[in-house]
Image (cartoon, rainbow, N blue to C red; front, side, top):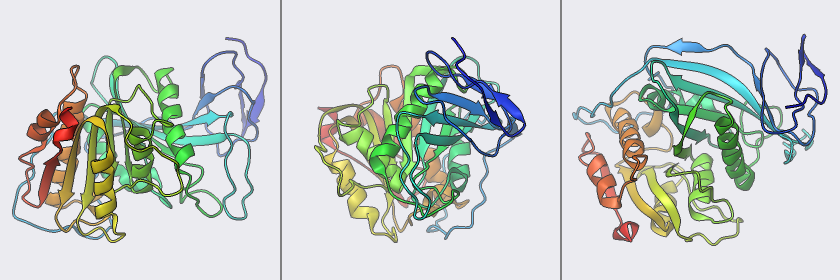
Length: 346
């Protein structure tokens, strides 16, 4: 590894240039003044913080209520959290309204890891929705981390609500961002990763990003073994094909009361996918966002279903559609239904 130069971040000098691979740099920063073209690198921007249990608070609309008690997921580890910045100088960031386009893609990425778990960890890379950011999904991301998963949630420079300018949709580059995050973490940016247990997940436009990875061979990433498309769709304007055979397992989830009309479009993702195994989860009356992050019994049950899917799909031998179905059903709540396609076992 050879250092190629210095640039200044706030009051800290940083050595970003490297000959090969990705380097993690300790710093507290508020922005990046320059990018050394040709080398990807990582900057650690916050010290780890710890929470003892997943966060369950939300301000979103309520999901349907029933008297059922959701199944619990186990084990539950304390969760350590930190933020790193991943920089890909090989791709550009488009304009956001009156904010001009610029070189490179800077991905501020929140890392959650379970405390007390030894060895390389299974990885889940999560994509947030349009005009949103990873903090919106804390109950869901904390749930996965508390159950033993390393969770990485990048803030997309195109569609995030927390950046200057007007958010824009950019499914192709965000799908590539997810693969870039995987590459960065496999290089050691956030600790050891189990290379045989990698999943991608996303909600709304993030669920659409996952659909690109799972259904479209132009964005396929052979390192991924599990896909969770939450209230996503097959995007208009992105060329197919959309039914190329893909290894791995797919969970599509959607609420029948989705206020943006995603129920049939998410179902289309499920029906079109030619993955090795797949299941469709529907919450009767469920909305677009609250069904994943609220503190209601139904939302807790949906989160528990996603954990059971991950556990089954990332087994060493994988899981057939029948095995996924038996892992998810019974669901722990009568408002949740699980549908399987016999095509998934072909």
